[in-house]
Image 1 (cartoon, one colour):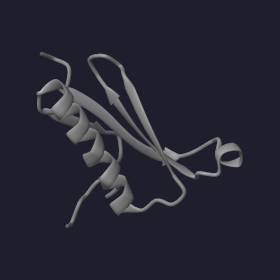
Image 2 (cartoon, one colour):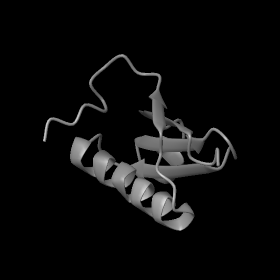
Image 3 (cartoon, rainbow, N blue to C red):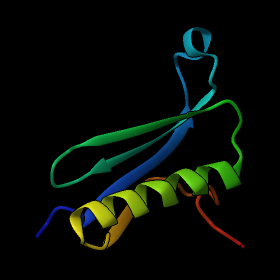
Image 4 (cartoon, rainbow, N blue to C red):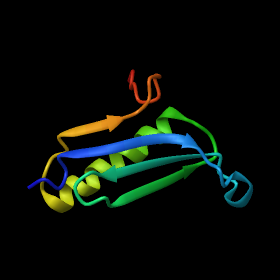
Length: 84
């Protein structure tokens, strides 16, 4: 099944900051279904972001009984480097 073969992950500044009072958002897109998950954050805290990514991973892998094969990010920074 191709369902979780590739996901796209992006952490960015929110353009809606003045409306929703959250400065950052994390978006995860399933490449196969184009289903989108979004989390909003008031601060760019690595622990909170990794918690959201692990929450997503556990939820979808348990729901579909398939492991995520690849996660693609478009960043060139250390946004997603987990040193823990």
